Image (tube, rainbow, N blue to C red; front, side):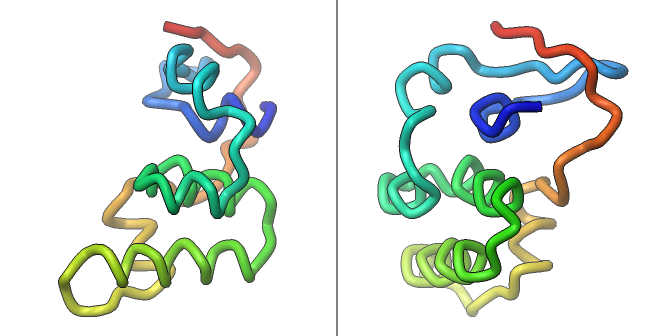
Length: 97
């Protein structure tokens, strides 16, 4: 699965990722930091998970904590809040909606 597809996946159906095509075309070229700065925290977290760069994950959590106005959360808590845990390995198709 390409980064742009994973970042804008809205769900899965079997081995198919369902991707928000409008968001992908509009924001797909933004970096993890740029996504987070624009308030697109779920795509930013997905981008950081895809890159597997610890600093990107930490940056997303830091920006989330700054903007949320709640008690600070950890990376694991943010994954649970946003519902993104890892890049699935069993995805063979992408459906753009």
